[in-house]
Image (cartoon, rainbow, N blue to C red; front, side, top):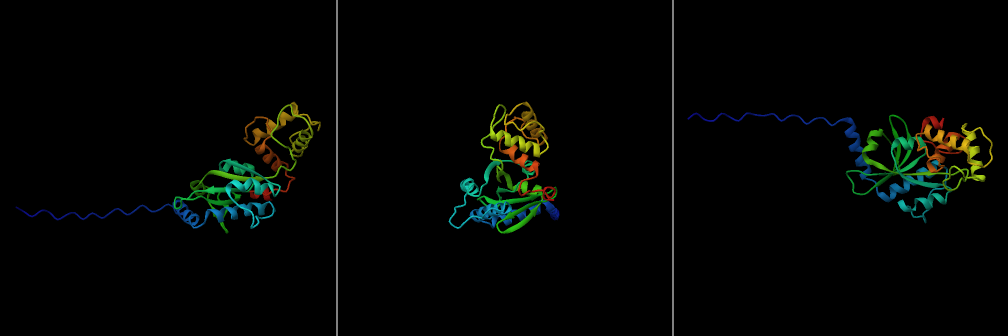
Length: 238
């Protein structure tokens, strides 16, 4: 009986190369894994406070996710905590604190979002400034964000049609500064004021509910262009 044929040598197929985007995600996740939750949150909060030219946190202040509203209030700011996406944050055009999740770490890491352009997102992670493509950020950010903002005109709680008073007059002046309202500043939230609010909400892809809440106010202050606000976009900074 003839001997069996020798085994056929099979050369293993080479591993597919790692795409550049995958390498960027892996490198960014390694960087996140080397930063602590507590320190990254404090650095991110201070980066956003610094953008507002507000006092940084003091050693005797506790910085946790649940204390951000209090910390902001002490500096004349408000904390808008939302689950969002990059398109919404670009619309609001304000720096934000983002909660990031790396597959290489069990705990959350925080970063300050300080700038957004089409090709790069400018972050501060711990003490380091980092530029990453938006697609890389999407891999580690599930949408949790804290946007610090200031209600410059003290408009108070959310209001809408049929409201009246000094806060409505201030809203009408704000709408006029943004080029949206040409009626009298009479403190009455009537048809002309309602139309201006709804038209503005639609132009910014906000819910056209005719309610002047936090998102509408932030966008209005930015549209007026006369308030000392930090911005994410180079266009807004120029």
